[in-house]
Length: 458
Image 1: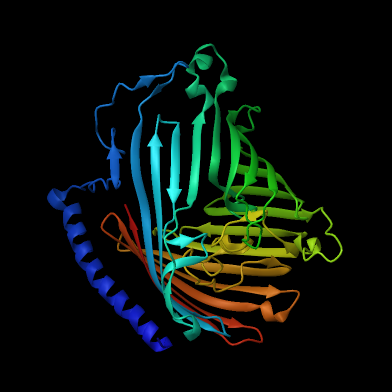
Image 2: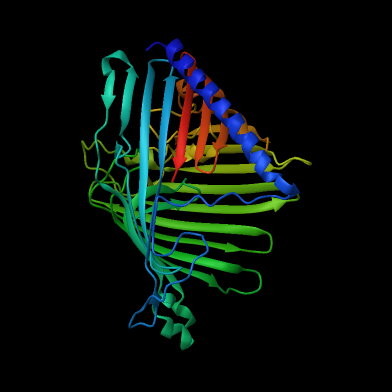
C-alpha cells in the first residue's frame, strides 16, 4: 500500500466517523434538552456483572462474615477496552504502514469496598511487541501479524489491614489502617519519569499520617519488586529486585513528592534513583516542578556489553498550564533539561522514555509500532512542548502542539515538530482519535505520521 493510499484510507475513515458523530451529537443534544432539564446518560454496564452491579441501584447481599470480623460480599465484574488503529509514519529513513489491534480484558473480583482481586489479559499482543493486525509497509514485512497470547498481564490482590481485621480498629489500633497490594501490578512514580512499568511486587501504604499543622495527608509507601521488571530500554531484565520508598504530602498550597529507589541485579544493572516533585498554583497558573536523578553503582566486568556510565544523570522538568478566561480550554508549556544520560528505573514496553509525559509529541501511541514525533529519551538534551487544547461542542477535543529538543551530544538527535490530536466520543463507550505530526530533523529528512484510532470500552 502506498503512502497516498494509506493517507486516503485514513481520511475516508475519518470522514465516515464524522458523519456518525454528527448523528450521535444531534441525538444526545436532543436528549439533554428534553423538557428543559438535563438528563443523565444511561449507565454503561460492564461486559459481565455477577451478584451486585457496578455503580447501579441494587439490594446489597448479606455476605459472609470472616473469622476476622470482616464481611465480604463477592461480586465479579468483567470489563475491558478494545483498540484498533490504522497508522502510517515515515521517520525520515524508512516508512511503515500498519493496522494494529489491542485488547485489555479484566476480571475484577470485588470482595468489599477496599478489597479486590484483579486479573488482566492482553490476548492480541505479545508483551507489547507484536500486535494482531496487518503490516502494509515495509514491503518485505507485508502480511498478517500476531497470534493469541494467554499470558497474564496483571494479577494482584489489594486491601486494607484495618478492614480485613476490623476488630483492631474497634480496639483503637489506628496503625492498622494500612493499605497493601501484592502481585503483578502497574507502578507509576513521578508521573512515569522514575518508574512506569507493570511488575511483580508488594506495596504497603500508610495514609493520612499526622506531622503537625503545616503538613496534612502524608502518605508513605514501601515497595519491594522481584519479577517481570523491564529496564530503561523496555527490555526484560532477570534476577532483578527493586526496593522503593515513595512519599507524598500536602501543605497549605503545595503537594510534595519525595521518592527513593534502589535496584539490585545479577547483571550489572544496580543503581540508585531519586525523584522530587512539587505541584502548586500561582494565581490561575498550575505548576509542577520535578528533579529526577539516576546513578549506576555496579561497575560492569571487562568486556561486558553493559555500560553503566550511560545510566548516570539527572532530569529537570517544569510544567505550566492555565484555563483562559471564559473558556474550558487548556493552554500549557512544558520545559525540560537533562545532564548526562538520565534513565528510568523500569519502563514497560510501549511507555516510551522519561520525556513521554512532556506532551503528545513525545508520547507513544501504546499500540503497534507507531513512534513518537520527538525522541523521548533524556540523554543530555533540552527542549519544550507548548500547546493549546480546545473543548469543542461539549464533547469534542482538539489539541495542537509545538515542540522541540536540542541534543548537546549530537545534532542528529535535534528536531522540531508540530502535531495535533482530535478526540470525539460516540455514545458512552466509543472514542475516536486522530493524530498527525510533522517533524523537521537536523541532518535528516523530515518525519511525518498520521493515525486514526478507535477505542471501545465495555
